Amino acid sequence: MPLYTSSSTVGTKFPSLLGHRGGRGIQCNSSRFQSLSLLFCSQLCSRTRTRTRQQNTQPHIVSFSKFNKNSSSTSFASSSSSSSSIMEDQEENMGGFNGFMEPNYSRELDVAVRAVQMACFLCQKVQQGLISKSNGQVQSKEDNSLVTVADWSVQATVSWLLSESFGSKNVSIVAEEDVQSLSKVEAADLLESVVKTVNDCLAEAPRFGLQGPQMALGTSEVLAAISRCNSNGGPTGRFWALDPVDGTLGFVRGDQYAVALALIEDGEPVLGVLGCPNYPMRKEWLSYQHRYHRIISKLTPPTSESWDKGCVMYARRGGGEAWMQPLLQGHKKLVWPNSARPIQVSAIENPALATFCEPVEKSNSSHSFTAGLAHSVGLRKQPLRVYSMVKYAAIARGDAEIFMKFARAGYKEKIWDHAAGVVIIQEAGGVVTDAGGRPLDFSKGIYLEGLDRGIIACAGAKLHEKIIRAVDASWNSSSL
Picture 1 (cartoon, rainbow, N blue to C red):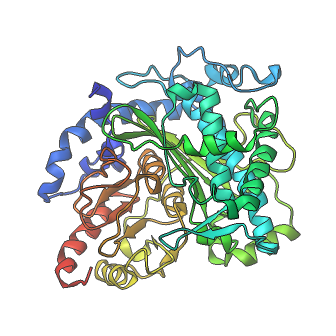
Picture 2: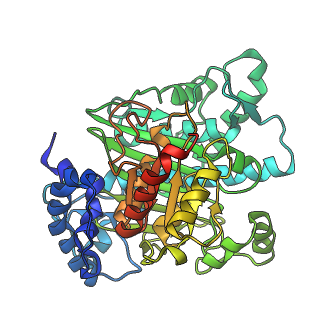
């Protein structure tokens, strides 16, 4: 295991447990945190360097080459010569990062953000068609969960883009969908729709600074791109974790969903990108149902300043910051910094003022148990129930303070449902563990094996410890 991995596991933002945040320490008597103390201490220096760098940085400018001041990487994926040095032009303004004890993932992050932007563009077009009429583009899988044209199309598109950018032999992907049902004779029309959707999206690649295919992909090539996502993960090596459409039910209903992409190295997420096409950029919009928001936003066309049409959030482990940029609108070209701005978790520590998120569907989490927990710790606000990893986005951006998920017996959490969100929350200043206070383990394959009861994500360590204590006190009386 390389040295850099031990300095920024789930402890990337845990220095706050030792009083680094705001200069106020807290008492943490639980023995479960003692095993993480070395991680917290080793991260203090990294966090201090980050804050010093942020003080000298313009908040509205972002360049991935800041992660390594000596990086000579350019925009390697654009088909236009005018975008061949997207990252280098702003390098001097960013202060740089010398990559101490950590490798440079700026190139991977650059491609990942652009690929997720493209995936969101694809999803928006498909969702508009689904809302008007389904056209048989929604199918049920063996576990009765839904899958759409967008799921297969995003998986094929992102798989193709990553393979073209880094070489197919160098890319290993864990993803949710396979081609078994798509390859059946009775699915011929569905497959044709997927192939068309993929090619329509890839034709737009130059707008996003990526290289598209010289000619349209054939059916076999699209199926091969989907099938290429057959990695089983594991504790060693590098692989990508992709959830092409997280929250398919929300997607079909015209509500919240997310495109999630993470890079995992030696069992630990090292970068995460989360595309949230329907997540309102103004916090006040969260009080309204999404369908109402969608109607109003159509009456008032969005601008880059209003950010009413979704966003992409992203972070790199050890970078000490998370960023958000709006989705590309209309026929514009994506040019860094694309109005990107840093995001941070909320500073609220009083449970009475905190908002907590949970899944919409009761089948995915016990609402009664989380309601009891909320009452026991003094949470007074109504829960924010949203589909998909948008819950992670809400915590990272400071729109909510707590995310709790306690799955029913027999359900196993999958790594692609959490990897990207975990990195982003941690780099935005938050804490993510299982209900025992341990970091989530992404090294056991496609599932989060060894998960202690559930998942808890919080904006701060004090809230996190209170939730864990409440879980301990309430668990034996629950039916989970």
